[in-house]
Structure formats: structure tokens, C-alpha cells
Length: 402
Image (cartoon, rainbow, N blue to C red; front, side):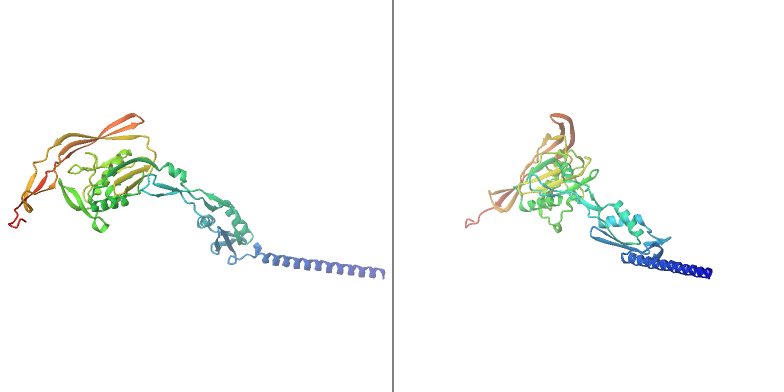
């Protein structure tokens, strides 16, 4: 009986132990399911439960949102990954970038100091390394949202101080035109406006005709006196050659290499012989080459009294002196007298003033401080003389005394 009782007690103990183990297993199962639910509540799906169609990634950077899911994200061996990780990082970086702003300037050509320099602005971009690590950790948790908190400054290419150092005055030249007709003044003003702030890049050849454009009535030009074949005639755009001549001299004083220049057939009054530069859109241009190492900017203005042209770029250590040499004067033919009954007998009217022609040369001298480094013959020219023309009256008064 004792033996049987002992077996019975043992059986009870075994049954109790089995029940306890079952209870523990059941409790562990409840805890595991509870943990899974808790994980699901915070969006951390266990790797073994991931499905490619359910994995998504949201990145917030600089106030912008970027969302990725299948097929950009795939799952392999229970782990989600971005198929084109580097491209995604670059896309987020550049799409969220607050770009830097280079320093710039505003030009007031009528001022003696024409430039007002505007400061640069630093940009802001995500830290690519922090972005990469953040995306990796978010995907390791099964996806979700990642907010970028680490940023880096993005420097502008050009600062105000750098810009100012490359915008020094290289040369300046002015001519007068206060006595010109109103139409000629308007043409000069228009050409200066179209020329102002022209940039000549380093290694580029400047063309006056390309910069100013064709001189036509449709583009706002008026008829005024021009020189054509040794005579003064009316033509659209009269006065523009004074602007081109001013530019030519400024180019010489700025140390630029002139590659094309034409003289007028008659000497002009606003600049010395051999320092004029005639232009015609169809056949004659003014060209010069920029080999200074940086861009050169042209500042041009006309105030009704003078045409002023200035070149700005890298500082020019040299100074230049222009020398006009007249080698020979050419006398005009005797004045032409034209009789007309539009004037009373004894009355005269000068139509064209006689003007001597000449043979001349243009010379440029280059200095460093007070030391002359070079003296160079630029051009030799011959200007035609201009024959004078006078009207002489032939009409006699009638009996009434008129």
C-alpha cells in the first residue's frame, strides 16, 4: 500500500510539474505575442514578418519629404534595402539643398564709382554621411520615417571680397558731344545703353557690332549726319561711331589687344587723328581680344555732354599713353561756289566748311611706374581733305524793292 501510495504521490507530482511547464509555455507565448503587438504599435516590424509591399521609407530634409517603397525598396533574407542607395542619397541632397548665392553687383553707369556689391549667401545641405546612416538604421527597423537633423554649410563660389578684387578699373576714356544735334545725341545714348555692362570673358574677342546690334529705325535709331565716301550725309545711326571710337581708346588704355579697327574717310573732331574707330554694321567692325585672365566688363554712359567708357576687371599694373602724330597736311580743293536764286544777289550761305586732310600715325607707349617699357606704332592713316561749298545768291529784288 505504501508503495502504491508513493506511486500515486509521484504521479501527482509529475502531473503538477507538467501543468506548471504548460503554464510557463503558455505565458511565454502570451508575452511573445504581446511583444509583437507592442513592436507593431511603434512601427518596428520584425524581420521575419517583413513583406516587400509593406516596407516604406519617409525622409524629411529641410522641410521637404521624400517617400520610397517597392520597387525602390526590396527585401532580401528578411532585410529591407534600397536598390539604388547612392542615387537616393544624391537625390535627397540636391532636392532639399538650400543653394548658396554668389556675390553679385548692381551697376550705376552714371556714377564715378558705378558698382554696388551685394554680399554672398551661404547655402545649407544635409550631411550626406548622417543621411546615409539614418536611412540604414531606419530600414534595419523595418522602415518608417527619418528626419534629418544634421546639416552642413555650402559655400558660394564667389564672395563679395573676391568679386571686388576682380572688378578694378583698368582704363577710362571720354569724348565730348554737347553741340551735337538732338537726333545724334539720342543715337549716342542708345548705343551706350546697349553696350553698358557687356562682359568680355577671358580669351574672348569683343565685337562692337555684336554688342550694340544693327542700327535701324526699328531698334530706335534716328537719322543724323554720318561720314560716307569723304562727305557728310544723312544716315540712320549717325553718332554711333563716336561711341565706338571712345571704346577703342579705352581698350588701348586698358591694355587689350585690338584685332580690327577702321578709320573714317574724313578726320573727326571728337578724337585725335588715328584714334578714331569707324563702324558700319554691314562691313566695318571694332574688335579686340581679352587676354587678361578674367572677364572684363564695359561700363558706358552718355549724359548729353560727354560719352564715358570704362573697363573693369583684374587690376592693371601698367599705364598707357596715346600719341597722335600728324606727318603731312593735305590742302582741299578750292571752295566750290554754287549760284542760287533762293538767295538775293550779294548774299552767301556756307554749306560745307573746307577741311584739310592729313597723313597721321597712332602710337601707344606702355609704362610701369615712370619707366617706359614699350613704344609701339599702332596704325598709319590718311584722311581725305574736304572741299568747302558756298551758296551765292543770284536773285535781284523786283521794282517794289523786295
